[in-house]
Length: 362
Ligand code: PMP
Picture (cartoon, rainbow, N blue to C red):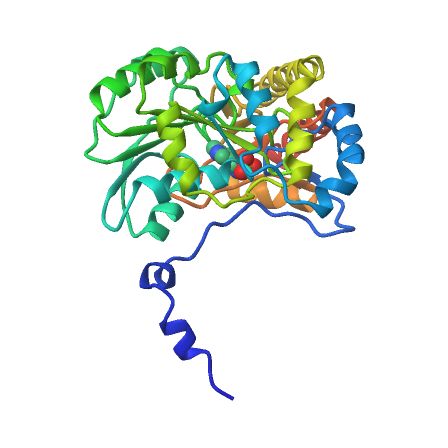
């Protein structure tokens, strides 16, 4: 029997060299953990989603779906005040980020992003054989301080901008992104995965800036992480170019039906979002009262630094032993904190109490 060595040697060197994206842990069946590590929604999606899925069951299994997700395009366009040809639907926004990288970056092209931001970006850059240009992002104490951050102008074709930032949580004001578009001459992709939990989207900038693309996901604020649905919004001609590079049937019929139903129930969306925002406020205050430093957040998570001498790593382990799964990044600049998704009030009260005991030597 032949060894796999020849097969492996034929893999592109860029792929062989990379280690791949490390997603947050998904506990196996039967593992009873309070899961606060991947920023999912703690509440169910709109009841209309399940209704739509039941209704779609037969045809959407047997037939290919709409290749451009036409009903979802139309629903998203009407919600955001755009034309349908300004919308490209994806199998989650991760697929759309990969599509943008594939369409704009070749070998050795440069792609900029803040450090820290979404840890998928360097992986996509490696995969493309592109050169990553990390731009250091300082921590701010107040959300207002984001407006005063210097506007970078790295030499790159593409700037991937997570706003609100992950894992810190602070959002760039739209005016700041407008200044970025003036100084930086490449494509700016504003990854607004968490924007529904912040105040301001940069969508209004689209009208004047064909170099701007905005990525949205239905995984967080619409509670559809398992369905995989994302949206890319941009200039019609840019979207047309990107359409050529996508898979033919990239969004399943089920995902299209679920996403349309979710976008269509704005009342449910707003109620869910407001609950999460209220919980985020209470949880932040509880941690602060116990000596944590909590970075300002416009997202459905907070980045929290425990009071010395407790280290984030030790607290992660102790919380896990008590059944709470949060996220600790071992990368430079992030080791001192934990990224904690906002769950239900009950979950967050229990977590705050557990963290308090652990920090007091309990
Ligand atoms: N962007 C950011 C900043 C994220 O944190 C995530 C979720 N990991 C995504 C995009 C991708 O979300 P999805 O593929 O579920 O739409």
